[in-house]
Amino acid sequence: EAGVVQSPRYKIIEKKQPVAFWCNPISGHNTLYWYRQNLGQGPELLIRYENEEAVDDSQLPKDRFSAERLKGVDSTLKIQPAELGDSAVYLCASSPYPPGGFDEKLFFGSGTQLSVL
Amino acid sequence: DQQVKQNSPSLSVQEGRISILNCDYTNSMFDYFLWYKKYPAEGPTFLISISSIKDKNEDGRFTVFLNKSAKHLSLHIVPSQPGDSAVYFCAASVKRSARQLTFGSGTQLTVLP
Image (cartoon, rainbow over all chains, first blue to last red):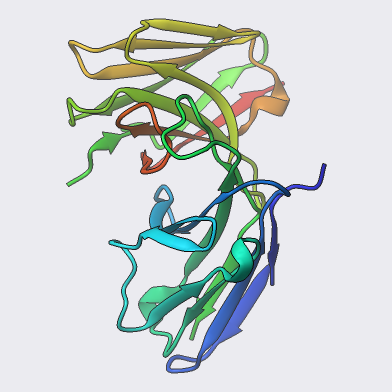
């Protein structure tokens, strides 16, 4: 079974440029997450999707960040314009458990390392 | 305000000995706790979990202990192997759901051969 696939693995851009990350979750996983991990810290949730609906985007900086999950499968996270402080690893995760399921766990992709110069 | 704290950024252990990784939390509403392991250039992978109705959960060489009164949990690895060298993240959530995990900052475990 293929895992969560993310691309690109690395991205280097100059500040004020746009950037986009792509995620393909594990087949059949209805719930998809985007996390950001700053250096030396744990992942922090940005947005959670149940199928194609964004059900928790309270931590997403909406002035510059946007996300979509068309058809409830793969997802794109965009930053426009990027700032120096956006340098981080952006992780996508998916879960097969239905909403409200107990004892669920997340399956993470390898992430995209973003460097903003 | 860090609700989940891993106060030891690093830990070195000899192969075959026990590794003990610690995690403290402040939110008394947390009722579900997970440990994730992360190798360089890979995403975190699930290791073991425990819900607040238990105080211990075991899976092979890995055991997680939960002390609710102290708001403390620990991960024991026995015996430790060089392949266990990785960053270990503690995470916590409410309603026994992983939908809003709060992660600690991680502990780098190095198992020396």
